[in-house]
Image (tube, rainbow, N blue to C red; front, side, top):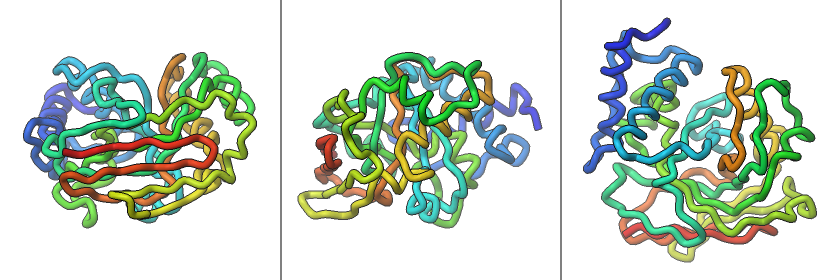
Length: 270
């Protein structure tokens, strides 16, 4: 159903509580303002992101893709990937520092990321692996920072479409060094591993991402955005998905990820 203007404002005001300082848990949106499917959730997400930018949260500079691996779909009870915004104010490089108290319940994921050398145009859809690969400038080892801003996400409180409207847990990223000669790598076979305070907490492979290759997530995103009449711009950052189930943190934790052939990244929470 289309949202009224008043309904959009009401829903966005509630979602913004999860990004406030200090953040507050987001419960169910009012029934008539609650998205009922992915399409309605993305309408609400667009309005939320405009409000976040207007409120000083920064520009949207990329997309995080959630639930591209079986381990994450099973963990969150989703059956398909979904996307959320990356804001420039939340991007760190190589060794990122974050304030623990700026999150409600902070977690991390071991990710593979790319940046685009040129736009992937909606008019060129349907997109294929070969087509999107020509637009990739570099691959990166990466950490996604996620925030459980919800009353009880394990019990699906609120619902998954509200999660999607709220950028699907997205709260920031750390990008390692760029790898521009990525075509020489077997990206499907590469192993990613995450440590917290030096202890290994999970590992996976590039082939764990949808259809057996990290770039298949970019194909999914390009086609999803094309269906909405949208390009993926040049210089866009895309987080392709986590090869390790989300791990939740305590104050003072130091997180490192190592991705074979891509390198490492680190995040510190103080």
